[in-house]
Length: 473
Image 1 (tube, rainbow, N blue to C red):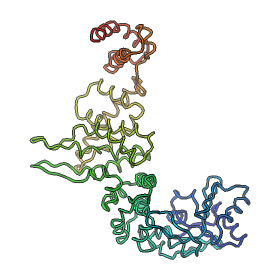
Image 2 (image 1 turned 180 degrees about the vertical axis):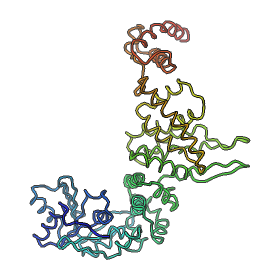
Image 3 (image 1 turned 90 degrees about the horizontal axis):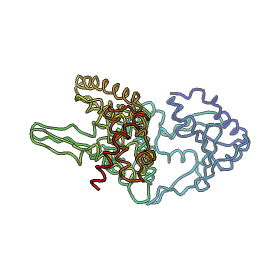
Image 4 (image 1 turned 60 degrees about the horizontal axis):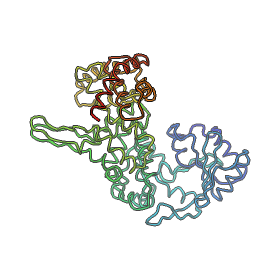
């Protein structure tokens, strides 16, 4: 493994020229170095610079030389942030950290390069490149661990995770992102120290959730999700997901492990899309199966209503995990509808059924179809092939119906204010009933989804509906 042409990188070149001019010992460190060695592009825009001395003064001088001002200064942590073109450069004073029991905010003292590298989370992030001569500093065999695809802490792992328990999630996240294995002693320490994650005021929910979502964004999320489960971390941070695990058998009936089925669905989804919230929908699509599970003699296991119940559970899950509420309705819709396309593939469905699903899915239809296709899993490849062939027909039919009948953002072409005007009504429940009657006629294929036919239909049905409504009320 080698650092190819790092001295020619445009920002590294500027940083090196400045270090030589000022005769200040400074180093490239962290993810930028790791990703350059791995030839990954992900960290290219974030550059960490370690300064032996006052990093803030150094950063101010560097910024001024390039006609910029610093974007932020963090005096307590002795760091400064500079955005230079599309690059985010963080300058930090080499420091030693000590932690109090109920905080992950350290007391900081200036120190040497080796002491600074020693405090870092993992050996693969404890590599440094000297900006004066581009020599590589590897005090903790980080290169060896990169070659062997190992996640390991520079120091004793229990102390590493005690000082900053967020590193528990970071270890799992790096294993998931890079496809690495966590070294056994480090893995045991994660299991032993996991409760530190939930100690009061040590790690915020926002930081926990951010790491969890980064795991979900991995090329193969099941690596990280399975590690979270096996170490017991998942039961602490997302117990509803952890409770999906387990297979029960009664008589000759068993049901497949919903947790591992879910991991398959998430990986299938991840192969098709980088959309984080579609992946999240895949993660929670069966979240209500444990509480809807029922054994019926001569039938077997059932999970009736897990789609509806699961959608309702998401309100509290989003609040607890502090997920962005702007994504809630999207995920709820996918969870609520995830059984519908598959049901159409296994029965003789009417055009009306296709039309109703297309209208209800609206703009999420393509994402719903990706989720449903991902949900077709089995250890029997012939069974999967058969289901997928059936689903090909359903997918084509739903898309065709949605486009033909203009159902992407479906509602009555005759709006409420015009219904009131035509029928001489004031705002009331009756207006909604009339509007619903028009929509039902379109979905049943009685009239096209167009303004004039819808208006004619309203005029035709209004007197009958109004008289029945008035008779009841």
